[in-house]
Length: 372
Image (cartoon, rainbow, N blue to C red; front, side):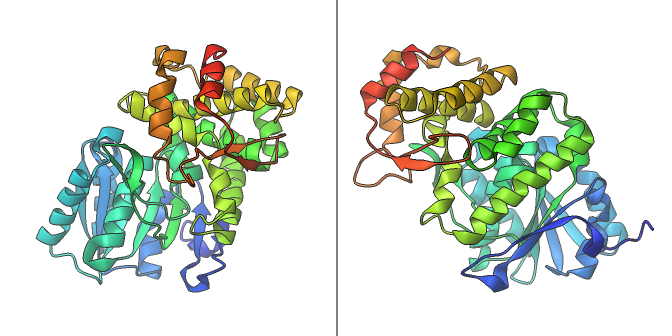
């Protein structure tokens, strides 16, 4: 029974409309991390593997994964870097690429992105550019990476001017999700992931939104697995239709236009999920001032964000009208913009979205005045 192969595990297919040959599976199962060697024996993505992790995950789980692989006769190396969004940079990327070279990696080898969102983005970028591209798989260890950043092939690093301004879209060969990793996840990280899960509910699934509304923070592992599964389905569906962010995929950026600017302004001291939750609240307040959102849904969304403490950020002092100038300036370099106008995703009601580029800096000032 323990030797069950991964064909029978719960999985979600990411079917890419314009690249069926690059489609892949998301596999979700408690205890999956210990089955990685068996999976890699069955699906040989590379002759040897570089496990790329930040220092925290490398210390907690890196050694164990390395031993598991070696015990199964799979050649592997562990490459780690300093944890934190500050290290999501071209410098870190160059260090990793040089380590791959020094360990004699070539195009027949592969990368295992083992960690949270920063790790997935960095390791994915390295995989996409090392010797013009080698395979990689995602093994996410945080709720954020399991439900959002680990799926869809967006890779990237931050530049001086803002978040994710250099990167590629390069799909993994598989996403292996073991919800067991959430047991050691600090609450701050769990809330980061919940922001993205709440986002899915708001933009696409009133049903998911209601599940979280009803259960709040009381999410047992069965419910958590269900929420991960639902989030992955929503993301897989959107990615499948619009891999390269030409249109529909942009709805995933709800709350992110302002959220990324808040992160940048805080010098990345504010966690991604908290900044996104604040971004969702602010764009909703801006929408309400223009009658662009249903009043009761505006209240439900803001109440849920409050109830889960998603946007209780220590940098709340940043969210003041006098910072509108700087925030707006950062938003003007956002990747989604067109013709110099800042483009927002707004939610007229839970489950529906549209793009809107008529907000001005004055609207942001007003929303910041009423931010609680």
